[in-house]
Image (cartoon, rainbow over all chains, first blue to last red):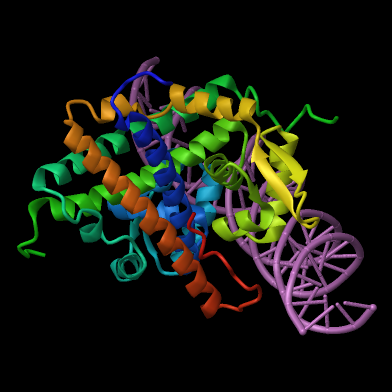
Length: 171
Length: 171
DNA sequence: GTAGACTCGCTCACATTCTGAGCGAGTCAG
DNA sequence: CTGACTCGCTCAGAATGTGAGCGAGTCTAC
C-alpha cells in the first residue's frame, strides 16, 4: 500500500467510499421525508430515470423478488407517485410510469435539502467539470455492471456463505 | 429549460443522480453478497470509516431507532464483523469496532466486484483527478449535512419523541 | 390451430427487520 | 443524596421481504 503511485490515489479511494456511504444515507433520509420506504424510493428513482418500466424489469434491476415489487407498486400507486396501465402489445405486462406532479415534489425535496451543484463545482474550470462528469459517468456504468455481476454470482453460488442464516457462531 | 446555463450543468445533475441510484443499488448488492441486510452493511461501513462508535451515535447517524441498532449490532457481532467492549470511562456505553479480518473480506468483495478506480480516472491529468477528488469531498460533506437536515425536519413534522442529536462533531 | 414451454404479475404463508414505548443501570450537576 | 439526564436493552405490533406457486397471456414448433 505504500507504493509511490499517484499521490491522490489512496485519497480518492477513501473519499469515494465515504461518498458512497453518504449517498446511501441521504437516499434513505429522502425516502423517509417522502413517506416512502427505501425500496419504494429506489424503484421510483429508476422509474423517473427510465421513463417507463415493467414490474419484472424493476425486479431485475433492484434484485427484489416479484412479490416485493408488487408491494412496492401498490404503495407507490396508492400514494399517487405512479401510474399503471396495461401494455397494449402484451396482455401480461403492466407499464409503470411516474406521475409528473408527484415527481416534481420529489425534485422539490432535492432542491430544498439536496446538494447544490453550483457550490460543488465552484471555482472549477470547464475542463475540470468535464473530468468530474466523465468520472461519474464511468463510475455509474461500472457500478451497474458490478451490481449485476454480484447478483448473478449470488444466484450461481446458490448461497454459499449465506444460505439461511448464520449457521455457525455460538461460542 | 432553454436557459443559458453552462452546457455541462444539466448533464452533471442528471449524471449525479444516476450515479446516486447506481450507488444505492450496488451497496444493496454488496450487502446481499456478504449475507447482511442493507442496514447492517450501512452501519458496518460507518464503523469502518470512523474506527469506533457507540450505539447511540450509530443510531443518530443512520436515522434508525436504538432498538433497530441493537438488532444490527447483535447480527454483526454474531457474524463476527464487529467487536464490542464496554467503555472504560462510561459504564452505560458500548464501544463498537469492526473486526479487521472480516473487514478485509468486505474489501475483497470490493476489489473483486467493485469499480476500478484506475479505469475511472484513466487518461486524466493530475489536475483533473484533483477536481474529481474535490467534487466528491464537497458532495460528501453536503450530503451528510442534508441528511441531518432532512431528518431533523421529519422529526419536527412528525411526533418529536426522542431528542434527535446528530449535529455538531468536527474534529 | 393447438400443445407445450415460457413469461408476467399476483397471492399467500412465513421470516426478518424496524418502530415506539418503556425499563433499569449508569452519569453528572447541585 | 436527589433528580434529570443518557445509554443500551426488551417487547409487542407493524411493515416489508422471501419463496413457492397460480392463472392468464405469449411464443414456438409442430
